[in-house]
Length: 350
Ligand code: NAD
Ligand code: TYD
Image 1: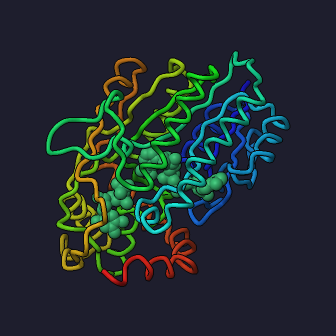
Image 2 (image 1 turned 120 degrees about the horizontal axis):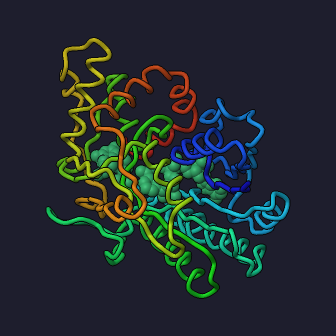
Image 3 (image 1 turned 120 degrees about the vertical axis):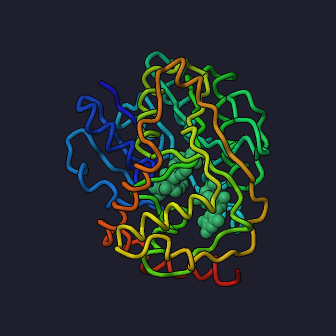
């Protein structure tokens, strides 16, 4: 029996994790706490919302009093912390909200856990979900290891780096049982269409321009989101306390090559001539401080805990494109209203 507080469970990765744990562990109570910002969407969890071992609470992780009362009311013994502001472009326009949620929000959760667990750390765990972006940018060669020094460049990655430091500080100073994982770029169903893959699938379908930053030569290491959720499950159950694990797909793609794969896949599903939508590619001004290359070495996770990605990329992209085409309603709900304003503000001047 466990009472697990998952923060950010209505977001992209969080909803996959909540679904996995609710279905796989009927004897665990999963308490999903989420502020429901623009990125949080309870439609992501329709299939499990009535399960007896699932509870949703709308709250802000920065609200220390509410968090503390949730710890008491549900006898929380474990936290898996995903709630965050997560989009680099938004962090460039509004760094304050990233410091607030990602740094102060993490600190508020850490303090609540320390206070409520009151030095009785037996059977407790604070698991912090982070990103490979804290390590900065690679040149053409090499990989991020767990020992790579932090070198964040965007307000998003700086705020995540800071939250990681606080988690380690609580482990080293107060003995809080913590673990951190740093994952590469995720893709798959239920991702908000501000990130590269869902944004471009949506635009290709609607014959809208595909805004490629700079020359499209930046490299990302892509992992199917369900493989990330599986990794979190394994780390949650088997990790050594105080440790860090990198999670990645050994699946590097230059943006422009990835975009061409997406174009061919969408064209194929829509019965267009394969590759004909390449005329939508539009090179625009580069992102400020744009990291050139991310690549994760996840051999520690493989060697110590036995995790490996399960999906080949081509299969993952096909599954993802098919999901977005089959779930037009989900996309329509999200891309109406505020999204149009976001799109205008971020893309019209390019
Ligand atoms: P997301 O933006 O899709 O979801 C974030 C969720 O957090 C949303 O449901 C939102 O409502 C909630 N939230 C935001 N501020 C909150 C607050 N103050 N209080 C409570 N809830 C709040 O993000 P995601 O892509 O699912 O990422 C989840 C976590 O994984 C983040 O910590 C992110 O840094 C990390 N991560 C993401 C990726 C990726 O590729 N998406 C890769 C590695 C790590
Ligand atoms: P993104 O999905 O925002 O993830 P991150 O910046 O956290 O890696 O972007 C992935 C890559 O795609 C990144 O190099 C920036 C680029 N990109 C574009 O070229 N155009 C876009 O409209 C977006 C959103 C991203």
